[in-house]
Image 1 (cartoon, rainbow, N blue to C red):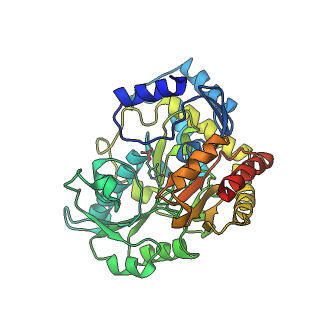
Image 2: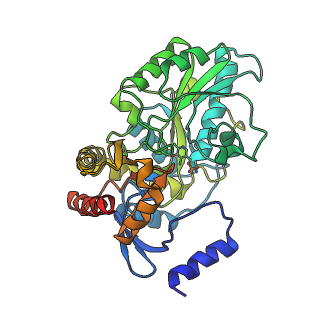
Image 3: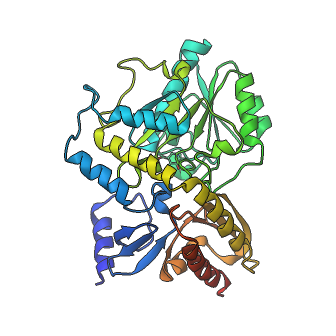
Length: 401
Ligand SMILES: *Cc1c(COP(=O)(O)O)cnc(C)c1O
C-alpha cells in the first residue's frame, strides 16, 4: 500500500468523516508551495482558505513564534501579558478602528459580532428584550457553530442540527431592495461577506457595499462585514470594503491574521459600539494569548512590508485576465478580486472536482466549490513566473477532452 493511502486510511479510521479532502497527504511547505509524503511538489492554490496569505512558513512569522515560546506562554485573560497590547494596537492601526476584541477562530469572531450587535441593539438602539434581529444573506458562510449553522441557506450545513437559534432573517445576496424591505425596528445588524468566498467567490454588483453602508446608516442598523476570508490583502486591498469606501461598524477578521501558524481572530469596532462589552460579558481562554499576539504582529508586518495588497491586486488582475483568455467554451465565468479568483465551468463540461483531480496530477492543488466552480487563491507572495507555470497547466487541463 502507498504511503499516501496509509495516512488516508488512518484519518478515515480514527477521524470523523466531516470532510472530503483531495487524496493528497502533505508533509512539507514553503511559500506558495507544498510537498506530499511521496515527495511530489504542488502549487497550493487554496492557501488554507486564505489563512496563509503571507505564504507557508514565513521566516519572519516563524521567528516571532519561536522567540515568544522561549519567554512566555499562556497566561489567560485573568492577568495581563506584555504582548497582547502591542498586538491590539497594531491591529487597530492596520485597520483604522478604535478597538478590538481578540478571539481564536473565525466562527468565534462571528459569534462575538452577533453578541455585540444584540447587546448594542438593546442598550443603545432600545430594542425590546430578546427581540433583536440580525439580517444575513442566502449563500452565506460564516462558520460552523450551532447558531451560525442555523442561519445558513445550505442544507448540508444546517440539516439535522436544529432547532436553529432565533433572531436571524435571510435575504438574497446583492439585493439592495431586499435589505430595505427586511429592516424593521427590531433590526440590530446586517451581517454580510463583501465577496461570498465559500459560495463560489460571488462578487456583488459595483456599488453594493456602498449602498448597504448607506442603508444601514439611514436606519440605525449596524453593518457587520465578515472579512475573515476577504481580509488582509486577499482581494487586492487590506480589506475588500475599501474598494467602495464602505467602512463597516463592525469588522470580523481571522484566517490570515494568524499567518498560517496560529489561530487568531477578532472583531473591530469603534468604542461607541465596543463599549457594550463589560467585564464578564464575553471572553476566551486563548483569545489574545502571547503566541497568537506575537504571530499576528509579525503577520501584519509582513502584509505591510511586502506590500501584499498591491501584489495581490496586480497579480490577481493578470491571473484573471489570462484565465479568461483560455480558448474554451467550457468556461462560463472567470471572476474575483485580487488573488481570490473563481473559474466556473458549464454543466456539460463535467464536475469541477474532476478538473481539480487532474490539476493535482499536474502539480496544482485547487478546491472545487458548489459543483462547477474551481477557486484559485494562491499565497500572495507568489511570483508572476509561478502564475505562468500554473496557467500553462490549467490551460492544458481545461482544453483536454
Ligand atoms: C472561514 C470563514 C469563517 C469561519 O472561520 P473558522 O476559523 O473556520 O471558524 C467565517 N467567515 C468566513 C467568510 C470564512 O471564510
